[in-house]
Image 1: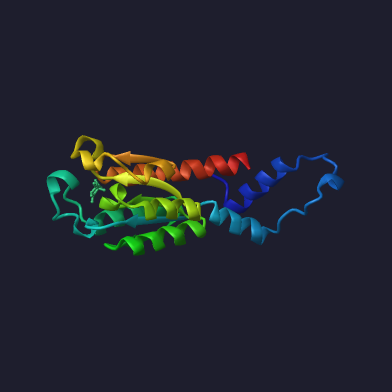
Image 2: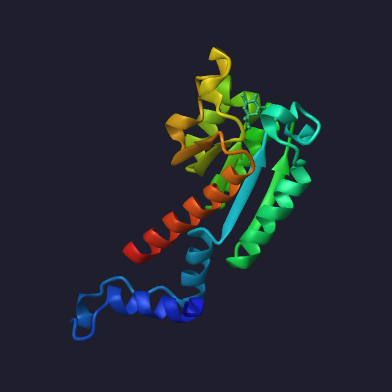
Length: 192
Ligand code: DQA
């Protein structure tokens, strides 16, 4: 793959094909600094956000959630991100308000979000609103298949405002979510 700068130039060349009348360009082309900042916000950054009780992964009902600790899941994901040149930010909280703040911050920063909101998935209109309000691009992840468990887990306040969701594949779901966000970012870059 070409270095980022070269890909920028390729994209600009496509946006302004040779021979096109420059006088038609009423808006000046953005500076390289601005383009780079846009590319970063077009998903050079991904936040991985975890809600309540996920800090207990590894010891919490391993038959349902698996044996991996949150630290292990994060380390594996960080390595997968690093291999793709992507910086991942990991945050976990047991508090709904704090999770709302994390979502807002990620969304307003233009970061992609991998979100396992734990039980707040099923209860939190505040999280739903935070995703809408901040424009966060969220992939919803659940380790377990929430639709094959108790009926109260079958409703998600996140799904209607998420790009999509992955559930039931354990820790693999996070890597699939990362791939999904990166593929979407690539498609958006190619289309812009
Ligand atoms: C969970 C599913 C939720 O129903 C539950 O409250 C969790 C974990 C999952 O990853 O499978 O805390 O989000």
